[in-house]
Length: 139
Image 1 (cartoon, rainbow, N blue to C red):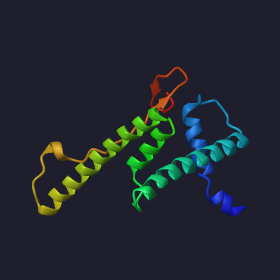
Image 2 (cartoon, rainbow, N blue to C red):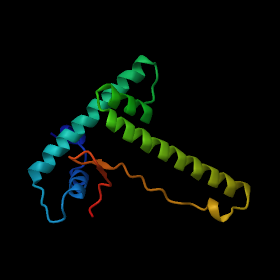
Image 3 (cartoon, rainbow, N blue to C red):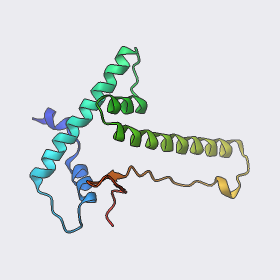
């Protein structure tokens, strides 16, 4: 039984994500959290397996974010793939900026005010039932 639970996402994290989209006064049963935990964990395993198969066919050992986006597309989840690609682009740009800033500091270059660290926050946006996006944060 412990091995089975090791493959699941932490239930506290699942519950926290579920609460973000619901009104503040809404309650979530333990059973609902457990079902969502199982579904989300299965979904992640399925997509990761698809991406891993692609890597194996291409004789690569490292699975990356682009492989996950490809897997999402390959199973018909194009909207999720597009959102992930936007996130990856923002993340990579942020990492490039941090690397450039640390290189400037280590070489002793003067920094102007525009090169100070801006902590990036990444927002996936959650697609609601009407098809519009929201930040996923309670209003």
